[in-house]
Image: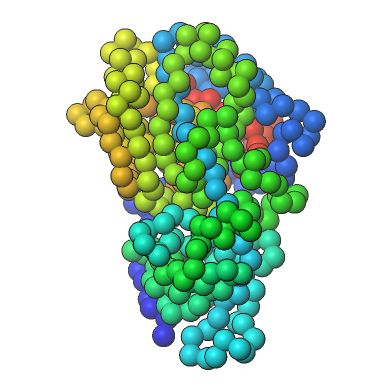
Length: 365
């Protein structure tokens, strides 16, 4: 029997609109196009105007004494082909269907957050699975327990994210035979190394913290030489394929004491705290008490919106987000709705590329 779950929606909706324009999707990384990672385009949005640069010029857009908050989480393999079995019948029968299994955060011993997507290219979520269904990959099996975290998918037809109980070594199998989580807009599968950033040191993200991807070792050195502080945090991403109006999932994070001290120093000195990505923003703002950053770790459910804006982060390096996505609310919370709309209008007009291998924006409100 299918369990019915009420759909949790964000109370706020982004005001930024695409005016019916369909964005360009980047189907391959910059280096496969014959360019360096830092050769992607960078739109710089300030109240004084919009400028267009190469990402490698970002050091020139920041001031000595500013801090860039970077996410050091590394991407792990989280996708594998599997079969979805209906309950109640012997497993010697034909499976219900082939699916692409996306495995996100571990929830404790033998429990995981998972998503089922259509085979072979993971283009759409599978929404008609039920509690008790079995998902079998080569080396482990999962039983679907219930919706995650406490709500259903954004449609009335079923759940998108599930808690699942595992039999077998899920992480070991994925490390040996899995691949990076990917979606149908990519030209072909890319290796796991393509989904790491120069800051990636702590394995744990289901999907790449992609705002950091255009940074290179040389660019990081130039930033430091320019007097820009690099402040590391960790936020292990869940599944980033939120539908319009669907809130971000709970995610694991850590803000170390050294980073908290540095960001408080920058704030006192009236420097800017610029987060590299929505993940870094969420981590920092999950560690703020009375306007100060404190050492913190654990799970965060912090959702940053214009009505609940950031207290410390005052600038943002980010990719481009889909129409209606919750990430757009975070952009508007940092940049302001008017500047966000001007930036998106310019990006759509100038053909900036969307998604993890696409172009970037720097918001300095």
